[in-house]
Amino acid sequence: MLKLDAALRHYDLAHVSAEARRLEELGYGALWTQETQHDPFLPLGVAAASSGAIQLGTAIAVAFARSPMLLAYTAWDLQNASRGRFILGLGSQVKAHNERRFSVKFESPGPRLREVVLALRAIWQAWQHGSELDFRGDFYRFNLMTPFFNPGPIAHPHVPVYIAGVNRYMCRMAGEVCDGLHVHPFHSPKYLREFVHPAVEEGLKARGASRAAFTFVSSTFAVVGDSEDERRRAAEAVRRQIAFYASTRTYEPVLAAHGWEAVVPELHRKSVAGDWDGMAALITDEMMATFAVFGTLEQVGEQLRQRYAGGLLDRTALYEIQPGAYDDARMKTFIRSFS
Image (tube, rainbow, N blue to C red; front, side, top):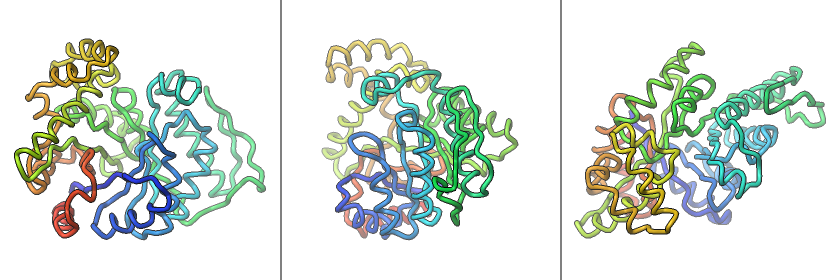
């Protein structure tokens, strides 16, 4: 059964409690934060203290901007405060953001992210069971943990770790060492079915795990509106967002699944030139129909269930649709249709 989640829209910590309670009351399955203009962890601490059922997670936090030890402490505290509702979502981000926005080294992102996950597990194991910490990898080494720095065991010690992945290595690695995969919003059912799932299944098989123990989560581009004019305006915004993502070579596998990879260099050239209108014009109506859902709120709900039938996704959210865009009664009915 597909679950419906929500993304945090207001990161002012003074307002997070009220928003978390409202989203929980509406019936959303999880509240996700992003690392864009704000820290993704601080709001979840506030939300953990003011909610009781909704899951809380990062989608995603930039892994290499932090030591795995710092990630371990933060996740441990959030898992404890939320009484087992926290999900640690990590991503490698692209080279430019690592080197120029965070000023950290960017090397071998796939193997390094895999090692981050393994290091986290080793650290948490030491805290929960009092075992010796002795993690030695190619990128990280952790072998000092005295009682003074050990936070000790908690009631819900298994912190689910999801990673963001687009290419085959990341998807396979998610299946091998993680609990879930954050699929990028720029995706299609065909890409999920023929590219993502086979790679994840390969990883699951390598560690002897079942599909039932793994979660696929993403947001979905949605052109939503009760009138034709509302949907027209929404479609223009979605078209521009798709063009933005498609201009990045990282996401070429998504277009390649449909034979559209040739548009990537042209989109990239226009992005460098700042030609945003020209970029949007390259996204055809066929592409829009492939990467987004269209209609009224209720029609979109039915499309989502059909689109991800058979477990293509386990949970999703409406990309860029404000949780307060519709009245609460209508939203409750909409959200209940996913439970």
